Image (cartoon, rainbow, N blue to C red):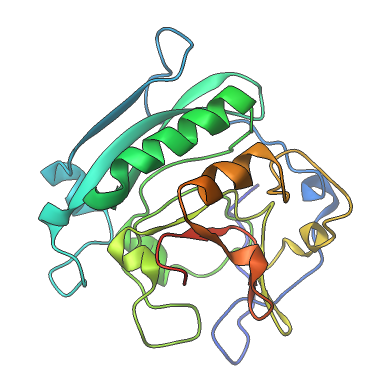
Length: 228
């Protein structure tokens, strides 16, 4: 069961990088709906100040580098791996809200599958690693991986798309830790971000940088308005 098995820790406090379970080598799990799917079956979206109850269950706190008033709460339609429309939620910086809504409309129109899209909760930041997460998300008040400076996610200016299908790699570290099978980008599977395809093009058309253009680390899931 996804999320049920804790990984042993490495000296750097990440989980041990293990072989991808066979059942996840071609990952196409169904979406567990948190919000009602779009009534029309077409793309639907909303953008509003972050409601108090959503802010309370997010990772935001006063020490974050962005004020709550600078953030926006989005709901957006997405296509699941079941090929059905679902509704996801996301917190982003107000300055990029309109562009993000437009990008995900293009992903929806292209039928690009997304497994999960929800706001990250504060307890998740300290939870033991399971190495199989796959949440498409934006705002997370945390430092850059392996560093002390704030991540672009902490400003709501970066989005990770299908992290399991599009893992992060730095030396011997892979995140999520069970996603090594997806480092082989020549084996093309649904949910992968591929150069020249609609999902990547949609982000690059609004001027966002794709982490797959980096060499170290290689951050395939990551798109950023700031370039980092």
